[in-house]
Structures are given as structure tokens and as C-alpha cells.
Length: 131
Image (cartoon, rainbow, N blue to C red; front, side, top):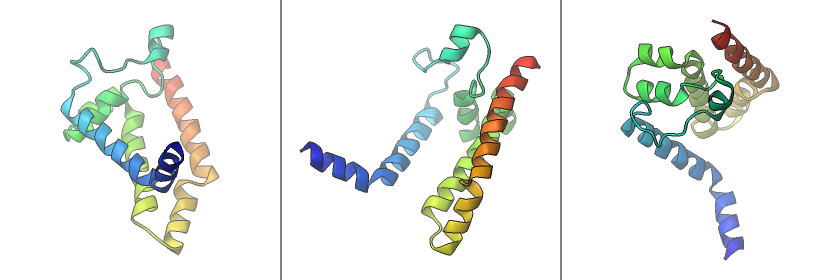
């Protein structure tokens, strides 16, 4: 039984990941993280008192899902950059095939793009606590 479950998960990993993403988006659309205590809090901020690069992401995504871009920006500028990047990666993975998919993967998932994303993520974490 476990072997069959493992094979099913391996075969359908992309579909399961997309389903998990949709479920998270629906939950964030329906539940405002500002008004609920059961929404997870940032462990880094609880321990250090500083905002991590991802602090405010839940609130930013909630605001984006409701079409409030300026509010999303006020919560976390970096998440507003990350969501279109994630959408581009998902588009490349699911909507494009063949040589075009390979070229787009080199752009969005290549070493340069990942390094730039990580550097910007860390820089954002530093800048948001200095300002």
C-alpha cells in the first residue's frame, strides 16, 4: 500500500503541488491574516524582534488576491515581486512545451536568476530592518 502511494505521489507531484497552491490561495483569500490568531506568526520575528524578508507575505498575498496592490506593497514589497516571478515559473512549467519551455526555464530557473533572487531576498531582509 505504501509503495502504491509513493508511486502515485511521484507520478502526480506537479498536480499535487498545484492543488496545494490553489488551496493555500483560497484560504488566504477567505481568511484575513490580520484578524485571526490561528494564522502562523513569523518565528524569526518572535525570537529576534526583526522582520525577516518574508514578514508580511501572508497579508500581502491576501491583499493582492483582493486587488489591493498598494496595501500589499505596504506589507511586503518583495512579495509583490515574488508573486509574478512565481507565476512566470508556473507558466513555464505547465503552459509551455518543447524548445520554448527549455529556453524559458533557462531564464527563470537558471543559476543567474536563482542567485539574483536569493541576493535580492537577503538584501530586502537587511534593508527593511535598517529603514
